Length: 191
Image (tube, rainbow, N blue to C red):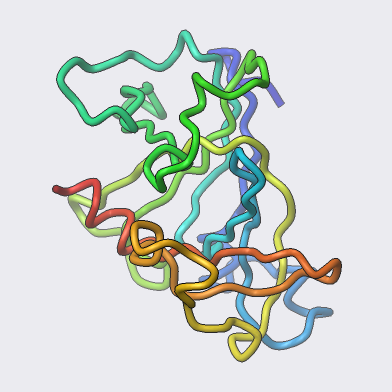
């Protein structure tokens, strides 16, 4: 639903579900495992992030991201999110893929995953960091057993990409999905 600022927001209700405040239909009927949000990056890469590190998925018009000079090329700028500055990062570009502005698709809005630097199982900490990770397309929340996640392999990810992944899984169609490490992303941003 559109907010007063014209931003469509899809709340994941992650914090409330993980703390047992509201029941999750997925957890009651799903097999044991962790929940991951899968998303698509150009060109042809699907990645997953653990849901407990995510707060929301935003759809933001590009003009609502204010560029900041003298930053790394993968930092797109900042966005006013709930009254605070949210750093917007081109996730594909950070991982060494094609930057969003060089992709063949015409983007009238950005899909951003709001990620925080803790897993949501504890109390919100003062000074908690949050990032907006720009992705090409948000797909599904999947429940994956941790034994289905295979360790990173040099045949799957280049040496530049490997530090950002905890492993990979195969979809039902046999496609690879990389499991991103939120800690590695925050470490790269802190440099």
